[in-house]
Image (tube, rainbow, N blue to C red):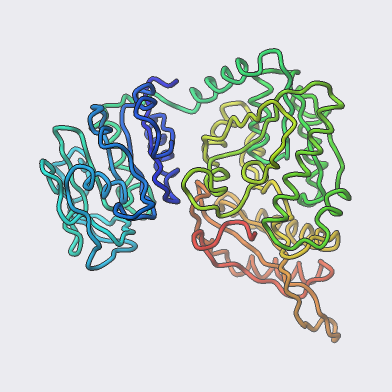
Length: 513
């Protein structure tokens, strides 16, 4: 257990994990737990502070999430955000009501800079609002510290008890000085020293893995992507040859990727690992034949992965643990806890009901993508692998709209390879969070060489993001898009049209399915 910890109590909003990430950026360890976490458990963990998150419900709703009022008697500083602010007011005798005017988006807020929470913050600052209810009257003993023209209590505090509440979302990038506000809570209010860093996480996790596995054996599901690679190296440092890495080439990888992964992790690679490559392309194609629903594809791929791992484990001998590179965005998007299901991940929500392993180890489950990369660098993994393009567990299965066929796989592999090559040539790869090509299920009429064609459309995607919870579409140079389009149409058989996706996350996800 860390010496210092902030606990985030999750009331069901989609950005709750971002709060934990922002706190960690302040070098203070932070974990997210359900809003109904028992008070005794909170006492046992002895956090330096508690943050109530936003949520989709009204404090007066029948299915509203709440917590015991006694949480305010623990003597632990509390910060309520959005719904968490309204819940604080409701539990402590204030009044919450439907706002005459709902606020959504960037809003100018007048700030009392004398507050510990707003030290160093501008007297007028831009914050991100998203609410239909508001605090009409603050509880007795609270001072109003922020207002907007339509929100009389945009922030309030009871400094004597270290209780704070803000109606806006300081965790999102759109709140211009939100990171400063959270830092003020962590340091000015909770009196944290800020001693947690990634090297501490890596060291602690390796020790926990070693203790958990003991003399047992583990099988790591290695895809060659950033997450599973970091997980594999972390496990190897913890248990050495007790680990076997199984790389399943399911026929849905990027062009030449299977050979590239083997070159890094195989017998001739730089890591002293037990490495097994399973070529299972035809097996996966048969299972996916005729399936077009993306959730069904995810679950088929997830279950088949597990079955292959089980078969390989039996060849190795008794294997107790399955290791996966699950990270925070995987968990939250799979709808674990109060948040809504966006999509199942094969290594979280896509697991079959029966898994023939004693336990699943997910050493990166608490980290965001940028934190995983920091962990990778701490482990000594080369930058070229740490900063490799993210790739989903189901692979091209979720970049092929509609049913999966070998023909479509080859089309999207070739198109994606061209896209990545031109992005590299343009020298802009480092500016992008993720970029890839997908094949749509749309076929359209074209004219090539004076002949009519009726072929597929390729969609290109490129986004700017650091945490992969939110993303903006990248404005790629037109000359780059033009070169990519020309090459794909001319070099990839079966394609006569190229589109560019301009949608951010939300409302879209980064992947297509």
